[in-house]
Amino acid sequence: AAGVIQSPRHLIKEKRETATLKCYPIPRHDTVYWYQQGPGQDPQFLISFYEKMQSDKGSIPDRFSAQQFSDYHSELNMSSLELGDSALYFCASSTTRRGGETQYFGPGTRLLVL
Amino acid sequence: LAKTTQPISMDSYEGQEVNITCSHNNIATNDYITWYQQFPSQGPRFIIQGYKTKVTNEVASLFIPADRKSSTLSLPRVSLSDTAVYYCLVGALGGGGNKLTFGTGTQLKVEL
Image (tube, rainbow over all chains, first blue to last red; front, side, top):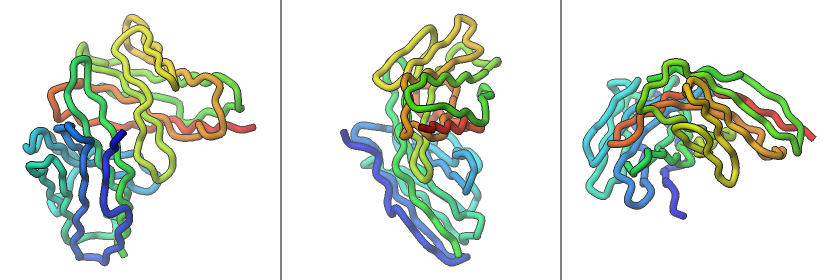
């Protein structure tokens, strides 16, 4: 079965640079979530989109922005990168169905800021 | 969102049944209980989800008592490959925009 696709899988950037992470949800999924997982930490929710509209916002820095496009893929834009932004970034997708909602995670993008 | 509490770590041996209990005392009426498994540097993998009583799938069972203030993930006959972090999450689902709040998961270590 098709899974969530994230690109790139690995990214190395310098401080103050920008980065764009992409997420392609499972076909027919209308909701995308972004999570950040620092080294040795648990995943933390950043932002989510439902039907191309922002639906919730978590601990996302103002330097980060995201959007969901007409084909439901999403991009997380990160500017003025800091060393502390080094982390795994996961995208998850879901669709509302009778009886609940299950989020399926992608393999993640490992971002290293030098 | 309901806060969850689960053991930080558990040890087991291959072939044994492992039960991980999660407490969620302030679970709301429309909250579901979901368990994820995560291997190092990989995305969390959905294991099982339930609302009440018992749910079983091909990899695990989820037991939820009537008061729903706790839940137990049961992994039958674990193997070395089940060594991972297991997260219990509670939240209202449906309608889009339902973030998952990860607490400190349970590091399960399976040995020979």
